[in-house]
Length: 237
Image (cartoon, rainbow, N blue to C red; front, side, top):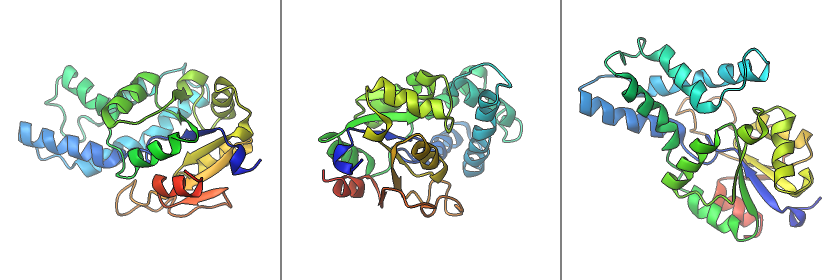
């Protein structure tokens, strides 16, 4: 399968397309000003995200029934309220904070890069985010998806095989006609094992200035790009 035979690009979203950490910090800084708080939102963002994979693992391992990412994020948030001084927030305020994941900001190259890629390819999410979250995020950030797919439509969280194969199936494509685009090597490895082509995009500050993982591609992925504009150039868009 050559790049000319790719029909769809499927995207990891958190970290690859949007800057979740900076977005949460900005939201928290606004709350500090409004409520005269002194919360360290950088530490809060890191602590909240640190609960992401463990909560997904409970569903992946069958330790609990299916729960979408909004629910998992809300449960994780509840465990952090006392530690970070959020006890002054009522439940409606915590619910709004939880929906910050619906309002994440794109990286500067994201929208122009996606618009270029859209000229040639179907663009679809292949994210662990739930459909409502991803739709709201797309409207907020101007993300020009052709389809919102991934874990919720497959009822299976990445990196389990079903999440990738169901996404390709719903697009009416063979896995080899899809290219997974991600800033995370584990995601690309799982997609490659399902027959997808792969594109690594550098996001060296996703986890802040002290990031230690996914700083470099760990395999010989089909394409390695500096950002989504560079990916568009390398795919002839």
